[in-house]
Amino acid sequence: KLITVVDGLNKKEIDLKELAKKLKSKFACGGTVKGDTIELQGEHAEKTKEELVKLGFSSDSIET
Image: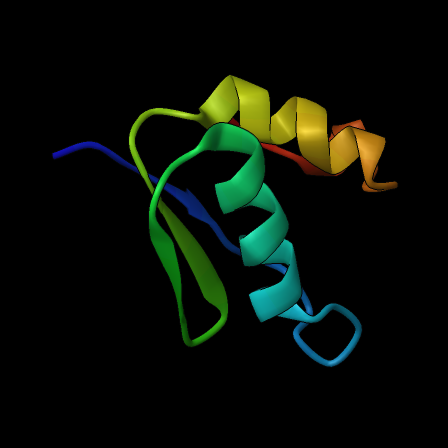
């Protein structure tokens, strides 16, 4: 199964569970938070980047 992994986020500054909840809802997929990473079920790399930029993350700091 394909998964999309979001990592490199500072969990002291960002509520990973809340961000994961927003992304899962947006993409209608399952997912979880493991340590410092968010795992989303399915191939959502490009859509995830677009959504993170909308949420205020710098597009230069996001690799797909």
